[in-house]
Length: 139
Image (cartoon, rainbow, N blue to C red; front, side, top):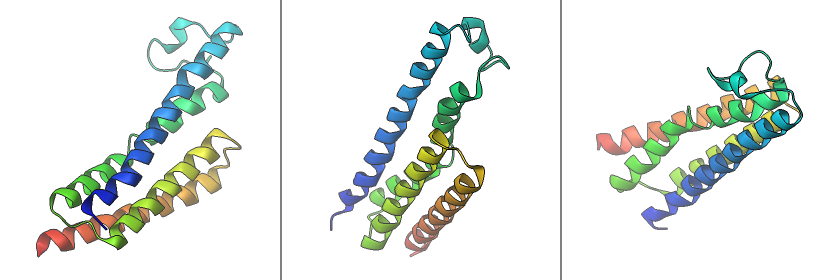
């Protein structure tokens, strides 16, 4: 296994984030063409007039820009420190799978309990990745 193996999960999560980003204008334009919103409804974010189903893709996108930043940082840190191991890459793939599942739940049936479990599990994996990084960097 090479150090560059860490870029598989990194690129997949980045690609997934861009895919979710594409949903934001699609949902907004659909709502606009249907007369549910106008430009002013997005002047300061999203007004109360924006239907919940139109808000969800934007919220899912924002979720992919919050904690995952720590994932990207730890992956690049371990790559630069030559600390990428098979177990670290395994954790990275698990993290990405959990984040994608979290987004899919959010964008589909949106049951908060299921989202929370996936979100919490992904955060546990992120912490495990950081612990591995701290141990490696402390050596």
